[in-house]
Image 1 (cartoon, rainbow, N blue to C red):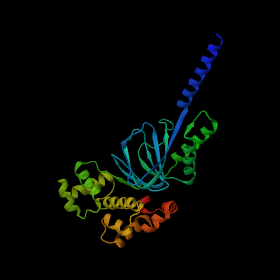
Image 2: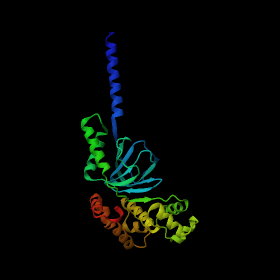
Image 3: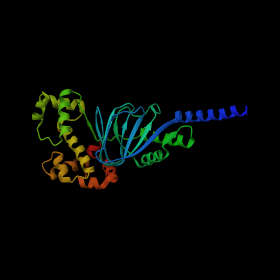
Image 4: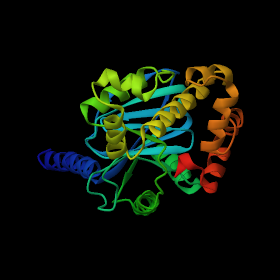
Length: 284
């Protein structure tokens, strides 16, 4: 009996050490979740990097620096400790990879929207099925290496709305975000910010790399994508996005994305991939 105690204690200690090593050795964690239309995940941050992937539905990610709309089969990269919120348009199936900080020096340091090629899509789904990936398991170590190679090579394709930081331009941006259909001209809107139209135009160009008209059009396009994902008819979407007629809205949509709103919504991932390959303006 005396000899049995050390043996039992040793076995217990081995189990504890094993669990500790496994916990330390995990470099990728995953999450699979489904959200109802309109659900909002409030502002928060993670101490691990995050690749947020939409297998179905449309997500909008908001940070202090801007907003990103993520259609199906695209993703947004969120570095560790960046505060963000997530808004769902339509029913959303979300698949997330969390990567341990320091796992690679080549990972992006800023948020961006990225194209997800078929290989990475399958790797994400496989990792989610496994729940975690550990370096000490040879098969998982190889999988980790391939995932990192894929993420590091991802082409950024931002469908992004950068936000100006100057208080005057930010006031204009927030006014339009609250009502994308606002019909006022730059001259009328700039009065609310206590600045001249020329000043607002200069601030938008210097802080968002877009002129005011282009920024406003991008805002309306992203708003339209969320409404389409929620199942709104094109006529309603056109009016909600600030266009006088469906034909004017469809013309803008085709010019930016290379297809009509109805075909885009029906085409799903295949249409998105085709548009990205063609180099449509909004995907550059």
